[in-house]
Length: 216
Ligand SMILES: Nc1ncnc2c1ncn2[C@@H]1O[C@H](COP(=O)(O)OP(=O)(O)OP(=O)(O)O)[C@@H](O)[C@H]1O
Ligand SMILES: O=P(O)(O)OC[C@H]1O[C@H](OP(=O)(O)OP(=O)(O)O)[C@H](O)[C@@H]1O
Image (cartoon, rainbow, N blue to C red; front, side, top):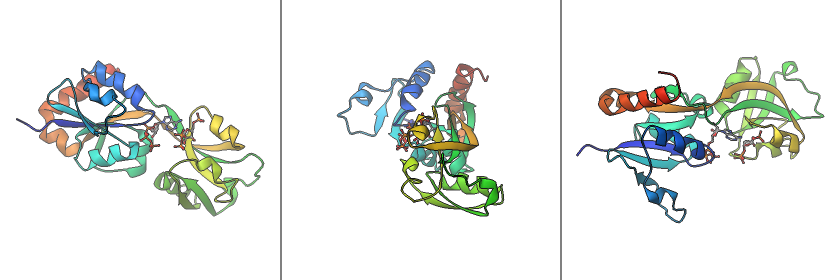
């Protein structure tokens, strides 16, 4: 029997929005997927030829780009950060909407336009460097995996580049958004080589997502 298609989905906040989309294209994970005590990372689905892996958002991109998974769902922030050439993102799923922004302390007068070098705490060093480079500024990125908002008050960096949704995390930490780098939403991603080699399975599946998202 042919190897199953591996579908990678992020395990965190996007998951709740991704599962109904999967269901609407006919894919439902097996019961163990919903059992919090179950430590498996790969799950069968109602479709014999599709299995699901539940991994961190950044790892969805890595699994799919390397062909370890053939298809996945991930935020456009992650796609842009890695910029993997093997990753094809044919459908905007309209979930997980947020933005990637620059922020700094409310009472900090320094304007980004007036400096040639900045230190920035971020989970997105590539996007951050590219953004500041386009403005002629060299960004020294301090990589954090979360809680970027702590960096300015603790002297780690004056600026942060982080995801903003409601803005309440910035506000609670006395920061203000000074620039918007990227509008973000969840995307369907497919490994380009697999899309060619396993087109009989992947093309109809991608088409179903397109129709569901109104992009057919
Ligand atoms: N307020 C938000 N904060 C963080 N991510 C958000 C927010 N709103 C939408 N997103 C999207 O959700 C994605 C994170 O997805 P999710 O939380 O499912 O992943 P994760 O693997 O649990 O993340 P982590 O790397 O934090 O463990 C982001 O890459 C972004 O595209
Ligand atoms: O604008 P808001 O609605 O407040 O949302 C933005 C916050 O949510 C995310 O953090 P998350 O909760 O994922 O925690 P983390 O940064 O520690 O991963 C993000 O990194 C911001 O901190």
